Amino acid sequence: MAEAVVITDVTPRDGLQDATGFVPLEDKIALVEGLVSAGFTHVEVTSFMHPLRIPMLSDGDSLVPAVAHLAKHLVALVPNVKGVERAIAAGVPTVMLVASASESHNRANLNRSRRETMVILAEAAESARSQGLRVHGAISTAFECPFEGRVPVADVVEMAQAYQQMGVEALNFADTLGTATPAMVKECIRAVRESTDSFAALGLHLHDRMGWALANVIMAYELGVRRFESALGGLGGCPYAPGAAGNIDTEKLVAFFEAQGIGTGVDLDRLVSVRHSLLKVIAKGLPVPEKGGS
Amino acid sequence: MAEAVVITDVTPRDGLQDATGFVPLEDKIALVEGLVSAGFTHVEVTSFMHPLRIPMLSDGDSLVPAVAHLAKHLVALVPNVKGVERAIAAGVPTVMLVASASESHNRANLNRSRRETMVILAEAAESARSQGLRVHGAISTAFECPFEGRVPVADVVEMAQAYQQMGVEALNFADTLGTATPAMVKECIRAVRESTDSFAALGLHLHDRMGWALANVIMAYELGVRRFESALGGLGGCPYAPGAAGNIDTEKLVAFFEAQGIGTGVDLDRLVSVRHSLLKVIAKGLPVPEKGGS
Image 1 (cartoon, rainbow over the protein chains, first blue to last red):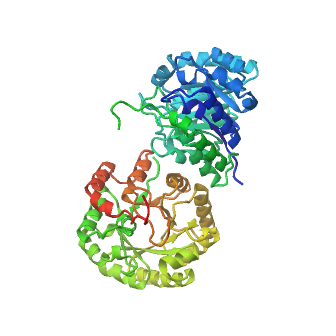
Image 2 (cartoon, rainbow over the protein chains, first blue to last red):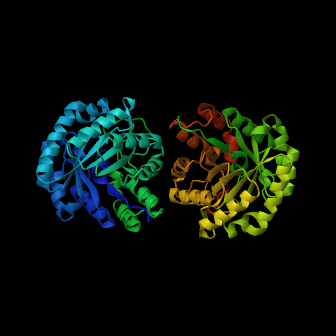
Image 3 (cartoon, rainbow over the protein chains, first blue to last red):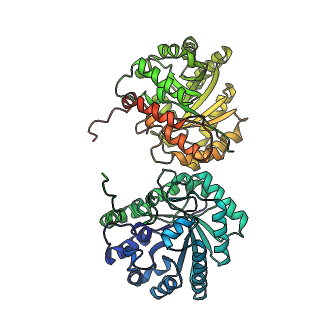
């Protein structure tokens, strides 16, 4: 029997952050409840960024308490100690730190340099761990950057080493643009494995511009990666990455694994039903069309 | 530098066999010339089946001599000794034998049992080799069958062993339906490698119903497979496999490899230009819509 994977559905966070219209709290609650009912043990529920940076997710402080009965399944993205405090106050047990491997995207996304970001994240990690939270880390633009093109693997390795020093348990590589190839995935994972004591877990957060996401998934799986992120309807993107495509679609990812006897813990029929019942919410997650588009 | 691959474009054969309208000889000539000009060293040009079985390809005896200056690049599908004779008369240097791993599809496609087919193919292989042709073999429905579902790997192995006894140099596994998974590809390739003296080359002929074709490609590449088949515009199918999807699109396959530094020998810009100049021909390759479809 093939080793199972853990899929984190990121629809409530990444899937809605580019939304055309604000998704009301009750719809977000239904989304989180639906995802857990389909079998997801990990749902990225919100980000505790400054509300003005990601207005769509400004209600995380209310959302998490509203799904307190599901709290153990929730992950929240946090940018700093203040985010950690909000995560603790709301009741999220796992926080995801994020920084970009490329300087330009990090500045666009987080408004400061990578170096400054890692100092702030180290404080956040320390604060979170000392208060009993689990701490995961993500490296955005781990493969290509909308401003700089191909990101040197050495930059990803440097960031992985910094995360390791912070005591991060699980490390995710994010293909923010959706243009990574299996060769890039292999190079990245091997380089990080060779340059760090192994993280408890490595993961991939894939967008899917080129139709290469599943090829990246199977390459990573073959290399021992067991954590993947996805969003319903292939929603998502990055407000600060022009041209970023949506996340890999959750149903497509679950079906791909299940067809190979690789367990996901997710009930695909139930997932389809949840997605169907939430179509109006998901439709709001579609990104704002560019002016002049057809 | 990653090891290069050999892509056989099968548009003139597989891509057109389901066509809505007959593609005239001059268009087929332009197609073959265009593909070779884009860099393909292998083009599957026609099949020498009985003209009534695949009427769209009944002009192979005229087509091959018309592109005699490109003959060294051409491969033709043949079902029997008579097909070999036609291939030799026309001037094709490489013949591809074909049989299905599932009994039902073999009967639908070739009108006889697998056992009878392999006897006939052995005669064809012997005839072809004795007259100086290169002989390749293909196993259709190597993963799933439209009538029988999952095809036992043991049946594929048995057929591979039979092909080996015929002295076939290269062996292609065909995902006729387009539903194979990377796990199936891995199981098949490993089982055939373990049960046969290695063929000079193994290849994949992929259709792409599920969007898993590139994941299958990279899995096979990781296992050492270096031969792949594809068709312009994702054309193709099988008149005797209800529900079969088109082949993996040639541009998509070339771009996927080239983006990873895996050489294909194909000039992608030139290929796009060739495809564009042949749009009307390719459009005729679209399958006949089912009645009542929208």
